[in-house]
Length: 240
Image (cartoon, rainbow, N blue to C red; front, side):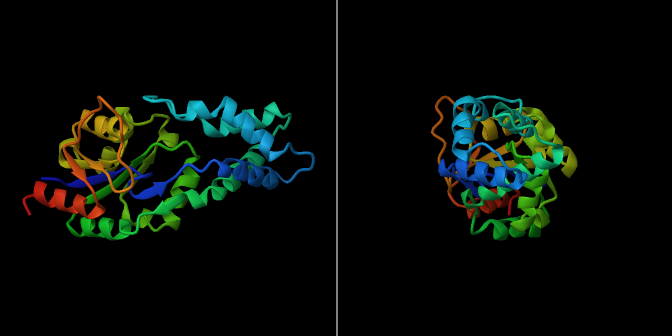
């Protein structure tokens, strides 16, 4: 009997798209939030970030999360800007807000979560995200997702990325559900399907936003072409 359903965040419950122009937009907003004269140009920051740091954010198979606030502090330090903790927090918040157009909640996300909860299932979220946890949890609140979840774990608060088992195990522990009684829904075959199956969860590959082209990757137990398909899979597993 399935007792819980856990989801990836980006490209599963929420569509996230990399938009290169937003990198400079975010840096410009962050510099303005520091509120000092004599700041470097945002385009210079964006160029140095792209050349020096960007490749490390998307390393395939990496399980150690980037300490993003420290990275930003180093980025600013390269241009001779030393920031206080309060200034760094303002930069990070303004930069995160500037990326809002890249985050779009799935139109049936609320309905899916409510339908699953109506079936008596605990709901959780496990996401690889390097932004500070306080900003990510605020996103969940603003999008009306937090109130529909029982647990949410981001890699930036644990220091481990999927497919590392620790991030899945943390969420299962918060839900007080054994892995064998949980379903994980995510779009990425290695991080989501491989990681979740590695701890004993049933896996569903989410295909409604994107199809992972990875080769020689773990295969999911089920595939879902729409969010409604997830509900159908859970019903089938529970014999409904």
